[in-house]
Image (cartoon, rainbow, N blue to C red):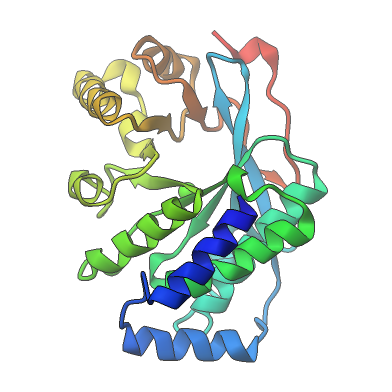
Length: 273
Ligand SMILES: [Ca+2]
């Protein structure tokens, strides 16, 4: 895939394909990129398994930022601002891939990215491809999760990024589906491989007929679209039972495992229903 991706990059450059005029963003992003400016704070990753309950194995691990010494993600994000957002996004990818490689992960790797930190998709993906190559982690096992939290006015920009990543062979996922701006209109405008159902729709779903109805609806939409559904934030066996009965096969949440600081964690066989 790497070779194919590189060919696509070259072809894209030559044809000017996917290159969109994003003057303000491009100026900031590429200048930082060229200077290779380092972040003035350090951080690392925790990994949380996403479990395939049908196959009874770990399907993927989501990389989640942590401060050194397992400081919470909030501590890290306090250090991110408009000036370093691009560098931070790129560094997140490299750190996630480096950790996955160090732990010899044989699963997929979910990486969160900030659409607002990607200026020109064809340039901003290079660091990721190079990290995959350098650390020997197969790029085709990377899943990019995205959510739009702060810029709803540029749906075209988001679509161009997601389409480009898919074009290169990466899997893409809408994160926190059903929360904030990650809703049905995003799914309608931006075809993806995976939808991650937000934890607020999962919480106490076993006691809540409304949430069960929403789950059935989303599940049916995903089945019709050929989109994979992941349930996030599953905490109890009762919640898992509802999801399993509805045919959801990929589960993430404290029920199976909390994020493990710089580790991959194990899922106990006794937790499957
Ligand atoms: Ca996520």
